[in-house]
Image 1 (cartoon, helix red, strand yellow):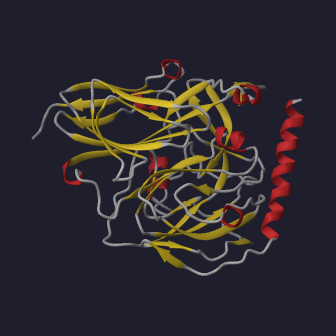
Image 2 (cartoon, helix red, strand yellow):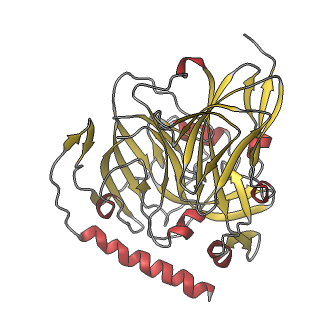
Image 3 (cartoon, rainbow, N blue to C red):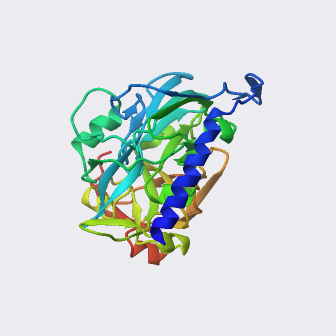
Length: 377
């Protein structure tokens, strides 16, 4: 039965690759309320590219957020290729993941409201790609993952059709979010019209399976006029909560558990892709620091009641938009694909536990540590 379901998923995905042959009418670019719409038609093609799977100046590995080192708006040339990788998500738990760029979650893209993104993606799921060799090419992400391979990533091949759905993009999904087959590439433009933190994920059916298998990440769109407290922020991090639905397979590897995913019964609920990473490598700050956390619940199906034990959230911008400000919150409730940008003042030296206050999720791994040193100011 499992093989039948997997084959059905593959067939549906392959049928959807037929979308790439259709023609899409475009009306040309236009603006409403200072926002840009009407992007050119996506291009689907084949290429000989075999370079770094992640390319771009403002792409980083969790929990890092690459600073915006430019004034005004910019066009970002971004590549995030689809590759399969064997990864570790908890002690002794490894599986062959479907990924954007080689990690779960994929790289963090940081842009400014109003920036244009020219995005290229090749479906390289049918070729082995190594992400852990040191290189100065590609992006900060490639350098960071080579230095800190905490998922113990190893190349793998799992040919499958895939697609990209940026929640930060305001475009027609049947054009830009087209499914592409192994060996195909897609290129399209989108404009970051709205400030906030937004999930990206594979949109090829079964979306539940593709997301749970590892195909998701975050785009942080900083407001063009910033947040009121920007000048006070000492440390800035990205934290992503997500779920795995895994069961023991043959050999040493785990495999996707279809029934558990359908029943919303995750085997692991984690921060930044790994059950213990934010304890093994805690976030760091000092007493008196204002820290900023861009928190995204990437699901695919669960909710998150995000809390920091020992802290109160001084400012919370729901979905990361500067107009959605709340103050003095103990917990932020995030549905699947929801986010918040959170400022917290670190009260004193010590350890603070990041936790999903839905304790069943916490006991499956949704915890982490913020380690605070003595006050320096």
